Image (cartoon, rainbow, N blue to C red; front, side):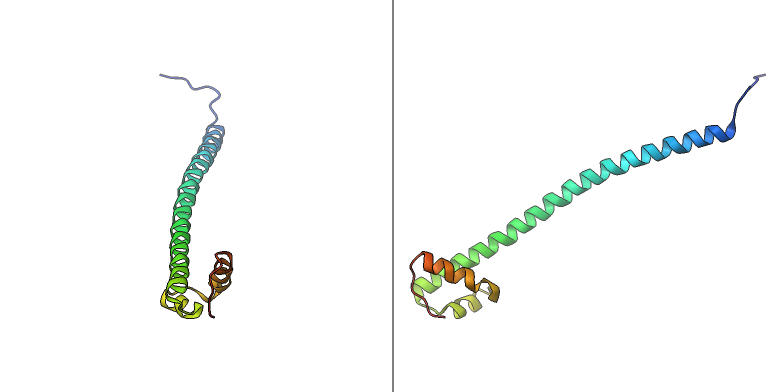
Length: 102
């Protein structure tokens, strides 16, 4: 038979719980960092695509205004640009020295 001397079940459980907590925290931090990086990449790509589409629409609007002499508001409506981009378009028209009608 085995003789177990000075074996404290409560202490063993306490140590195991502490080790489990530490291990869980480390796993959580690692997973959180990985998930955070992945979410950040996805968000960045989506924002880039959205911004790229907006830039394309703005460029198309500028082309329509300069080549077809369509009023700014009409060109924006056709290309479904939000009203808050009007200032940006007007500034770009001024930079390019393109005459326009609101």
